[in-house]
Image (cartoon, rainbow, N blue to C red):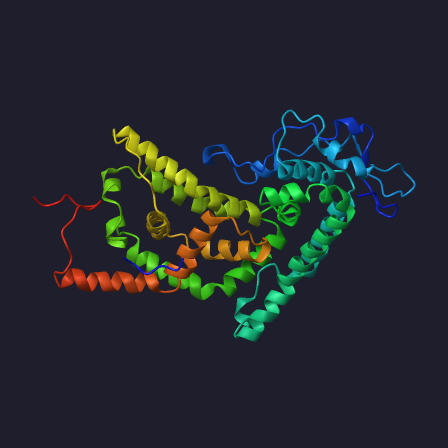
Length: 386
């Protein structure tokens, strides 16, 4: 078995309002709930739900009537078809606000992106030959990545300031739901900042991260070339024998297909969302395939089983840019304590494969096999001897 590392309103705040506050939150279900893979393409899941803006009136005029935030909790929840979670309602509210025409946060993002792209316009392609040491790498990151991170932090604080009264009435419920209002805000800001894989801003940041991770990318490609043809039992000789009855590649293709979809997604939170829900889809697909073969008994996948499947799929995918995707997620998303599925996948890649533990384990297994010490057992790629 391989070793694995596992209040009252403030009179000094600008407020956005609508002509008919009674229709404050009438809309379709939130697009943050991720549908299955075939129903999603690129950023549609995040963008399809934006409301119309022609009925919304933005204003920074401090003399205009303001929303009474003392009753904001009632405003947020009224006219809801069903009692949704506080996180869902806060997302709905903020999404509508940020969709307002000429909203200052949206305008600030546009100005920043234009300034950023103008600054790097003459050097669309990163001159990697000029990066010869750690100091040059740090300079590159400070020039290209750090300003975006700092600006997103500034916007997050600004959004908290504008909507602090609305956020305040949801804090207790958000704590109960193990949600974080800063993450909700950050998701929306990143959706606006990273809206196109072809944008100069996204391409520049990705080039920087590719340079930062170039040794890991090279190592991943090398390991995938030597281990991409290995079966599940060769990767882990204690893998569940019941799953060896599964000769379909559907569950594993689900993971491999999702990995390759990541390169089409510019939003770091959406990349993370794909990875997080990939585990559930993988397990459901395995159980469905087992049921088709008449094996209806309950099969529980332990964390080690999922770990083995991730390793198998990463090797088969030969998708070395997953290293950059994870780096991008880590740079631009806030940490979530409860996202165990993402933590498992990241641990498999970073702490097992890229650390060298996987390669060392495979070499040790090969020595045991060559010395005749391996026990004969059912394998997913061989017919057992009689």
